[in-house]
Length: 271
Image 1 (tube, rainbow, N blue to C red):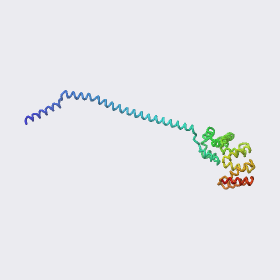
Image 2: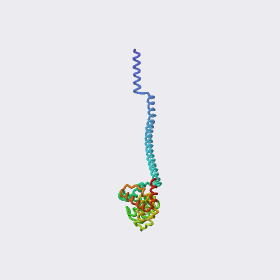
Image 3: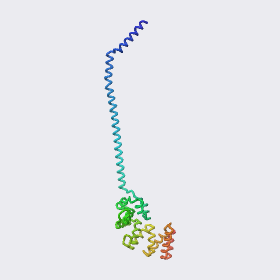
Image 4: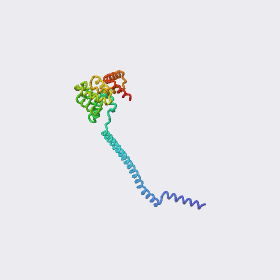
């Protein structure tokens, strides 16, 4: 028992001595450990810093590359749009719509009152550069009557002729009417007749009706009566007043032809 007590005291004494005055070997070992560990810690901190800077730099580079790619894509898209516009002209008005306005004599009202004269340059470009017949007619009428532009009748009539040369029925009809009546041009019925007849043959009902009126007024030739009669009889007219006029003109032409010819023409209308 005594020996155990002595041993315990001896162990406690040695432990206290080691804590109060550790051996130089232990101190040296701890110092060396600190000397070795400190550079590694600094190196790790430096590596982490460099890694963060690198990541930030890479992120900035990625953002710049993305922005550059977006600019390039936008430029390519704009170039493709320009190329497409060079290959095809986007219509100012739909062709069928403009022709309908022209046939109903609403085209000048559309340009002046509805569009407030804001599309003049576009109309001129499509008439003068692209040479679209419907726009040539519109531009010619604007020049002839001074709608949204300074009046220039000579240029206007010349532009109407360009549309007529491309076979636009409305241009043929209007020029025929102008020459027949002497509107803006010197009256010349001989020049007017083939223009109106051509417009009528292209299916323009307004021209067919005018052509029948001229024939009843002793213009043209009796050889023209049968075709004009057929055009009148084939018309579909909702307006009662115009319906009566069509009927009167057809009856007048029928009275100028042999009864056998009229019967033959009526038989044609059955099929």
